Length: 427
Image (tube, rainbow, N blue to C red; front, side, top):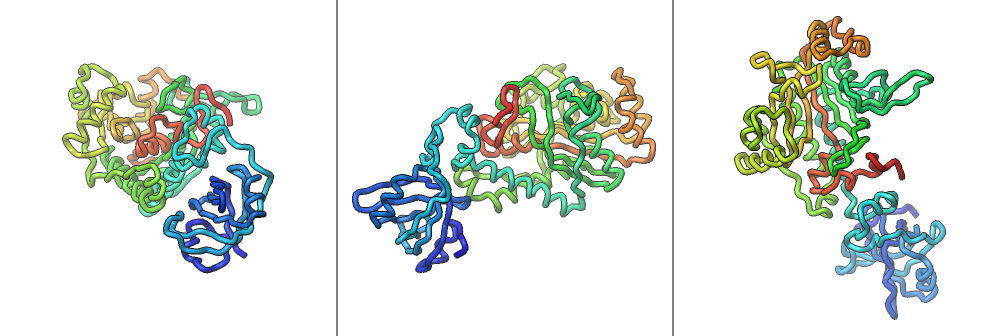
């Protein structure tokens, strides 16, 4: 008999079925016992009346893996309106050792460090179902870009020099030579614009930044996009808007159950996301006019302004100072001290950084010289621009930060399966 999932039971009323999963909860009453079985699709209620079956059930702690064969009957009070009666229950492994928290309770009462220490078990709880939202968001990301002629690429995660001209990289030994874990696929995705014109990648990136905050991870999943033949950064902003709309549409259609479990409603992406120049953003946030960047408090103020003035959870801030952008960023031709770059704020927090890139070889040489950077570490990258590269630009979305902001998680680690940060390398 083929196994079915709990969500399929209502289609088999009156039939004998086989289900399997974890012992989620046992309710041992005087005359009858109830076994709640949890599988990937939800919960199934099993009614145990036979004394021998009940005796065996008493020996099976929560989280033991079991198989149940029985008959499906209708019961309006049971999960999904059906239950399994006259069951034969068979353990598929030894009795489970109970975890340090009760997974059958509506909320996990353990602290976040305890949950992370026992992540393989804690992730079974419905409150940690944000991973389903992550999966749906990635599916929507890919679908939106595939529909627009983008090609998925896979780039190296071990590189010979740091991408962002910074020191915050993880160094390693590569057969006796120094190497680094990639901070981003930035160089490679630009080079692949010269091959496919439009590319994207889903992959891990590594930042050796000693941040110990609720919004930073040392390893996270980056959703990277780069497209050629743009007029300027505004074409990139349009592509980002459409990509976000596709991601949220997929989250609604593929992870609606997870959204409902978490009590979350996905926001609408405006047809045109409101945008303000960096200089105007400083005024709105009440920051000094010579501030070189936006602090988290400024971002929160801008998020509140966007909701109040535009009824939008999203806000573009354009024209960041060139001094705060990487060397490959294209300056604003009309205001060279400012960039053709942008950040996208989502509910008052930076979610995306992007913009137009330099595409002429001589501009790269000049940009590196202006920053006192030698060309040699970037020779393989810069060389490609001698052979014809179109005007291009792109962006990168931090997946975990996106999901945390969407679900209202207080800490990005709550939506990360096995987070890596300043203190955590296990499990």
